Length: 481
Ligand SMILES: Cc1ncc(COP(=O)(O)O)c(C=O)c1O
Image (cartoon, rainbow, N blue to C red; front, side, top):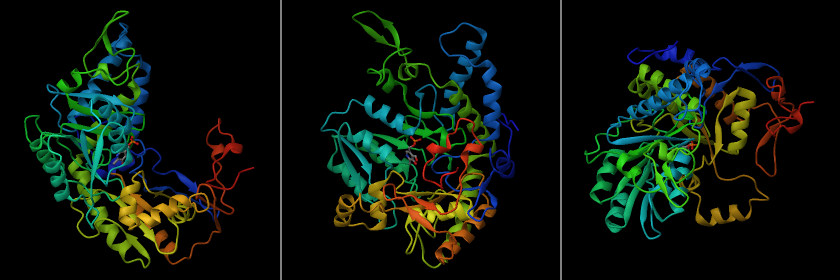
């Protein structure tokens, strides 16, 4: 299956396009089960089309922008076009915006923060919902105001407007996630853009969690609701080959020095003097990840062939199917919106009464063959707010960390565009069994990491990879002889 622009693909075809959709994993009872992957918010599997495209490209692989050989020309054309495709996916006008690649959203946010030339008393308005990757890069450079969270888990928009008014003149940027990786809640990014612009600031949208789930249009650059800067990651979009995308106005990136310097960034180097080249090459120091770029371009082409509206609708239906059933399981608590899913992507955080989140996630894996995530999802302030952890409890937990590996957290089930109700049914049945405390295994927590090991569960990764040394295994299962 290799859709090109203009062809269409159904959701069922999309599911067949997932590498490893039928992979079987060992369960505690000695049987095997098809792996149900519900950790798509972390990283998605690859599309088969992407894998095939990478294979098709590799005979043409060459480093880009420097060679004159035929393969260098092919690779350069494909690499440059992948920038255009990554921008078009979110409606960026190539005449006014530049698309550059880093290795992921984190690197792109850091790059932008380094390029912004912020002064210590400048202000970035962020929210208490942010992933650490859209918070810590700004804290390095200036004052960050964290707008609070409503009881439903959404950003307090009035507080955001107040912060813009209070710090008007000082606010250089509003940095918000398009969708939370904890609750899936989407913020009204175009409204926020308008308020930011009215206050003389720009907006950066961390779209790591929005781009895989919803159509995005950054709008024309002269529209007051335009998104100035936006980043997303290919590994959350079925192309896990190490690419992140950063988009912003060309005139912004034309100014100043690149954050990372070296080969490819310059037009002139003398022993005393350097002239920087034009973006995006100026901001992509060294030999770029050409294979990753090709993979991303193909993944975006596949997603475009299905249609992001179709994917959004499908994921909404999955939420409507899943969350009411979860709410009916005694002892299970779902966080974030539980009735209206119109502003929420397919990310479902929950806890189970009386059971540590790490234990629940381990049982889902070893007794259900289900892959989820547990912990704080790189959003510690948001997690503590959702769980109602008081500052005193927070302090006690930090001091106690060596003796008590249980940190406040949740379990997160997250959907991909290929997830179906069969996956959800397996998840719900296993969760119900866990909530009833009818799990079979004997589990012990590692006193340092807090991760659980199931007695008798064997995870023999050595059988899959010839380089793998079983003696260096991590504590996800008992050691394999
Ligand atoms: C909302 C959000 N922002 C940023 C990131 C960081 O993305 P990456 O790990 O690709 O840098 C993630 C990853 O989970 C995320 O969900």
